[in-house]
Amino acid sequence: MARKGRDKSAYVVVSIILFLLFLYHRCIYDASAPVFGVSPPRTAEFRASRIIKEDPGGDPPRVGSLVIPSPVPAVSVLVPDWQVFVIVSPEYSPLAVEEDDPYTCLFENGATSPAAFAGVFPSPDRSLLVCNLPEKLRRWKQIKQPVLTRSSFLVNLTSDATNSQPPLLRWNYLVYDSLTTEDDVVLFVKGVNNRQGVNRDPFEFRCTFFTGDDPTVAVKTEVTSSVQEVFRCKRPKSPSAGEKQSVIVSLEILRPNPAIVPSVAFYSPPRHLAAPGGWKHALCASTMVFNVAKNLKEWVLYHSRIGVEKFVLYDNNSEDELQETVGNLVRQGFDVTTYFWPWPKTQESGFSHSAVFANTSCSWMLYTDVDEFLYSQSWNKDEISHLNNANLLSVLPEKGNVAQLSMACFEFGPSGRKAHPSEGVTQGYNCRKRRDNRHKSAVLLDAVDHSLLNVIHHFTMKPGYRTEKVKVNDVVVNHYKYQAWPEFRAKFRRRVSAYVIDWTKRENPNSNDRAPGLGYRAVEPADWPMRFCEVYDNGLKSLAQRWFGGRSPAGFRMAWQS
Picture 1 (tube, rainbow, N blue to C red):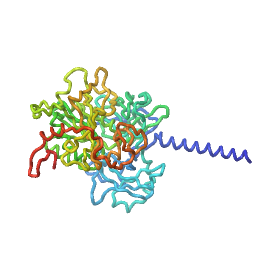
Picture 2: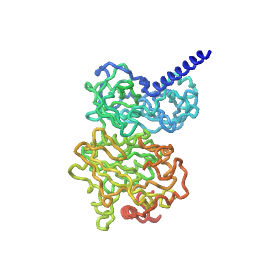
Picture 3: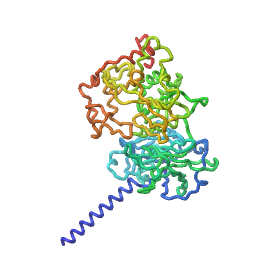
Picture 4: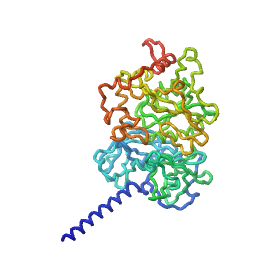
């Protein structure tokens, strides 16, 4: 009897182990994960003439006014904060959204969640709607993709409508975007190079291109670079432009566990940021933004005054009046453009994208955030404060091998403020820490390394080029980092870097990214208004008043105040 009991116990243990291995394989290395209803094959015959028919126009065919079916063809991805990204098929994008009949996500247990329109991915156009995963489903290990439908159609549907839906894609293992250059294709991939500084060999991968209507055929090309979440591969050989069609691009893992990473990315003709007249701007600025509308006008007006000619904003799924604010700035003559980039924790990838995308439009690119303002003490001198030589362009090297300038940051504290200063951050915060911390950069885009590797706003340069540190007395970055508590606590929601731990997690407590002594919860310390106040610094505040301040019936006001 004892032996039988031991045999039965061993059988149970082995069964559990096999079951867990099966789940691991399904969740982590599932190469059959669907993309817009199509499963990429593990092996595919090479028939280039049948799959890649590139069209210089870029967009898929459109036939008059389409009748949008219900459910709407889409693919869904579970992202952090229990949000579900529902990406509408290119054939039905951009999707018209009506207030009186909004879209809804129907899940397999019959639960529903409102689907809010977020934006449109470019080339080809794909509408993004966002819904929240119902709480009852959050403990499920396997969740099906929701059905996207108009609210008025719900009466015709039941939870059975989700029976044929494929599994919900997971954000931690996904090809989420791509960009085609004149020479190659750049893929942005989560879940392959997971540790900063540890990158797998390019020879372990291939890029694979396939059409949604014929998944048995694929074109595969060599991967030339594998760094962080950025993979570069050769463009597929294609015949002359012919029939328009959508081509999905993904990353094939050759070893040690062969798989094809699920993908929501498409192969398209080369795309670049438009360069008016074919000439490059001397200096542009690029940053990733989330709910920065209230500070954006101040940032754009100030940096335009010191030589920035174009602003490229990667919209990280903003929920405020960003587009309205950008539109107003454009009408006032400022060159501001946005690129829809809703993917969470992808700051490094966004910067890599901009280094390629904006290269034909910008010579130098400034990488700072909207709460960071460049300043030189020399600009505050009476004899030059209103002249053109108060300009960043005078700092940029005209020739030689210096291709990146690294500028130190002074971090400002709340300065006694308990609410956002209506006159702007340059006016409201004037007390900072004594010592500088971290650096931000200006980069010559033609000199950026092929890998597009960047860490904390700095790029790796091509061989033969170097980075030079700028003296604090020449140019410094005023970083209004620790603002009034209602503004600052938003940083707990989500950090944008792929390799920075969210502040709510009990990991890496001594990281320079964290606020010293704050802990893991968004709870305001009693002394917060006067924290980080070691030196009063009114240099930039005074300069901005001279450049942008003026008297009005309502009193002294800054140009960016409503």
